[in-house]
Length: 485
Image 1 (tube, helix red, strand yellow):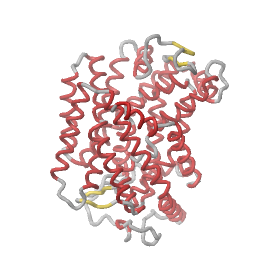
Image 2 (cartoon, rainbow, N blue to C red):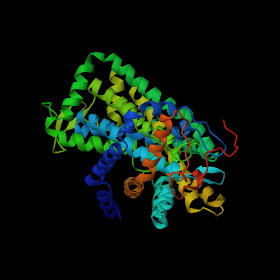
Image 3 (tube, rainbow, N blue to C red):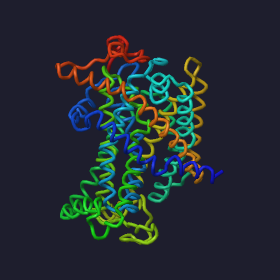
Image 4 (cartoon, rainbow, N blue to C red):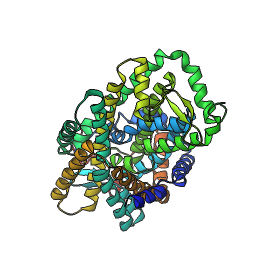
């Protein structure tokens, strides 16, 4: 079984797939005339302009839900691994994939808004919805929904809770059983409150965790400010084979930077599109731009915070091209991952590293579990459309909480591999879908820009633009006389 799962992963996450994500992001960047630069101001302003309603959450809340999934343990462990395998130059390529990936995030999130539905009093949408409504392919959409449901509810939560439990045990001596009970209790209180409670928690916790993490990074950089020119020179030289030590692994720098960047920011994977559909906006492009900016926040800010702490303090090892010997070994015996960040913090703030990493992992992983639940709930809502959802939704909560507790006390290697399979299937299906369905998103962007040139606050009407099966937008936008907050 394990050999079969590993074979599937070798296909689903092969190098061609990773570079396909890069190529598709570049394609969308070109087709949108690099909106991630042209509309940067709108991306920032729109985050704070939308308001929530009875059916939808605000743009900022939708951003926070998406970020709770994007910003996870990969921002700590993934960044460190990229540096270990690809050297400092991998950081530059992580930045590049974030810049390019913003194009993919825009397309999938705009599509999620265009084809969203009002279901059981709340907005629902995401890949399953736009695959069925945009492509007219039900079985394709069902396969995505099943893969997303299994991955988000069964296979992935335990991986995150294990990171929390392990970190708390190492830093504070808290048993994994106690950690598991606390995590499950807190997650339960949130998810039984529905989408609105998830959004409310996310809008406060996510900015707090990201800003606090970045602040510690700024402090460490400030304490080592004399290293600034040297570190940036090292990153750029290593990225282009101009550094004497790391120049020989430039291929690894590109491969690992791209790979870990995609794993971290999730652009094109379809995960962020679920949250994007929940936003109350007058035009789909508004949320598309906000979600494009979430990729920047994840990689350019949070991953960079990890990279800077590690590089400014020299707290890292880098493997040679053979993957066995070291080009540089500043931390003998320390495996690539949270240990790099812990050592970096300890070097600047002695005795604080283990506690800092444990707390950071707690917030990053905890909010990711929240995002997993939201993704799973959205897909179970899709699969049970028109049916009584009370029992399936209750079972979903029980299964996710059980998987979370199990992962906290014991995580099997097979569970990690199965989780990668679920995500891999989602990525494949979503990339195919957004390539086929890009046209409606591009039409929406053109419409948004035309209205902005006229000095209007853009409002979307799918019927006027000839976009079919986007029933929610067939009439002039209103909030259906709902209470707005």
